Length: 100
Image (cartoon, rainbow, N blue to C red; front, side, top):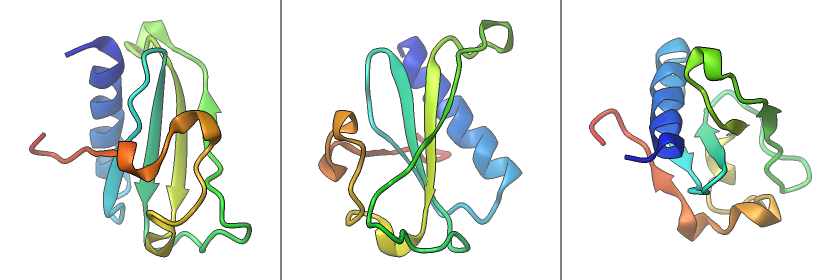
């Protein structure tokens, strides 16, 4: 497993443990950045129909070598909201589960 995927899976697991109401976490594979969308029932539906990630710098000291973009969306926005252009499409999403 490459370092970006390892970081994505680690963050997905940690975020779901910290916020148990997260329903699903989707990873949009990229060679240089972790891109996650977390589906949460208590997040309001997008007002403009777009996904708006927060970005975090790499933190090698914390074993997070890549920058990270994370967005939380309402379940109704999954598959419908417009992703950042460079993230691809919803068809590119890989669901990260505790078993995968």
